[in-house]
Length: 364
Image 1 (tube, rainbow, N blue to C red):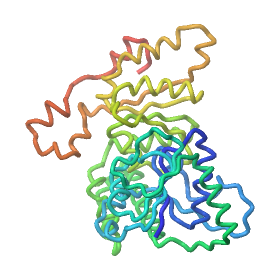
Image 2 (image 1 turned 135 degrees about the horizontal axis):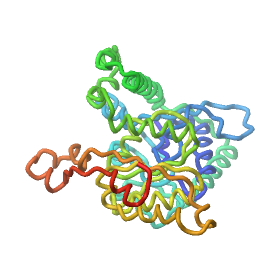
Image 3 (image 1 turned 30 degrees about the vertical axis):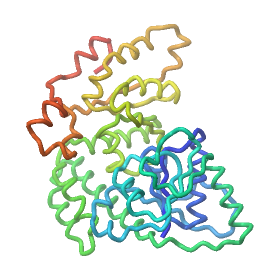
C-alpha cells in the first residue's frame, strides 16, 4: 500500500518530474501531484518518460486527492504503509494530514537542506538529494537486486479520481454553457457507489454562475492554450486551483509559500514573469492586491525604461478575484464568531480596482 506524493520539486524541475514518473512506473504506485509539482494538470500518460525498459507499466496520477479526502469512506480506506514525498511540502491540508496522521513510513526527498517541511517530525527517512538522483539510485538498486514490484493496494484511488474529474467537468461545462447544473449535481451524487460525488456536492452545488473555482479553471485552461506561465496568490486562489483545476497539460505554475502570507504577491509575480521570459498571468485575491498596490508602479516602470530592459519583461496580465474581503476565513474555525471574523479577519471593503489601473496607465 504505497503512494508517491510530488510537491514543488527542485532546481531542475523537468528532470525531477520525469524522474518522479519513472519511479511511479518502477514501483507501480499511484502518484498524488501537488498543484506546484507541474504534474497536477497533466493527463494520465507516460510521454514524459524516456527509457528503454522492456516491461512498461502505466503511470497513474491521482489528480483530485484533496477532493477524495472529503469522503469519510475513502478516508477510512486510505492508510498507506509507505509514502515517498518528492520535493517540498504540499498545498493541501488534507493531504498533509494524511501524511502526518495515517502514514506508516514517510520517506522525504528534497535537495533543499534548510527548508522546513517536517514540522510534525513524522519523516522516518530523509534524503537531501535532487529527486532525479534519488530515483536513479532506486532504479540501480532494483536492477542489481532483481527486485520485483507489485501493484500498490491504493490503486483504487485512480478510478475514484477519474470519477471526480468527470463530475467536475460536467458541472463546469453546464455552468459555462448557461444551463442550470443543479439537476446534474443531484444525479451525479446519487450514483450507487458515488461516495466521492456525495462528498463534493456541497462544494460545487451552489456554483451556478461566475465563481472563484470557475475562474481558476478558466485561467488555467487559457494558460495551457496560449503557453503562458501562471503565478498564483496564497489564500484561496492556490487552493481553488488545487481542488478544482482541470487537466489541460503541463503549465509552469508558481506560488509563494511560508510566513510571508499574502504580502508581495504582485512583486513576486512580476519577478517570476521576467524569469520565465514568457507571457504570464497573476491570479490574485483582492486583499492581496491591496497589500501590494505599489507593485503596479514597478509594472509601469518596466514599460518606460530603456529598450534592453523592457525586452526582458514579457506581457503580464493580472486577474483579481474581488470578493470584497478575505474569503478564506469563512472556511476556518474563526468563522463561528461572526462578531470577530468580519472586522478583524475578513476585513471587508468596497474597493474597485479600475482607478488603480488608470493611475498607473495600465489597461483595465
